[in-house]
Amino acid sequence: MTKQPRHFTIRELITSKEISSQHQLRRELQKKGFVVTQATLSRDLHELGVSRITTTSGSKYILSRDRNRQDIRLLSGKEIISIDNNETAIVIHTLPGCANAVAQYIDAQNYEGILGTVAGDDTILVIPKSVKKISTILNYLRNLLSG
Image (tube, rainbow, N blue to C red):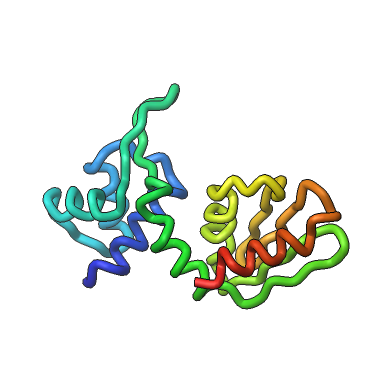
């Protein structure tokens, strides 16, 4: 198997589950059909910019926002089908299964005009802090997600 699908699966696992060790991550990857050595997994984690942090519930792996920002931006641009709005909100349509990752990327930007996002499978609701700024936020999102 090639590196790209494995990296995608590692990102998916780290963002959807609390993975606390390489051993646990290797088991999860194996369930998805990826058999990797510890050395390969270490290299993958380094290339992806994965960090291990300590929380109140123990250690877990996280994706570094800065290191993957450009990769995610390029990926996000290819996942977007449309960006529309009405007087009070913005709706982004994505490819099936992609809305959560795109919404996480939008939230990670900490744009002051966006209160938050709500993601389904292929639709994201972007909630502005002020409805008066809808057109500004719409332009910001189109530039951010253009890929």
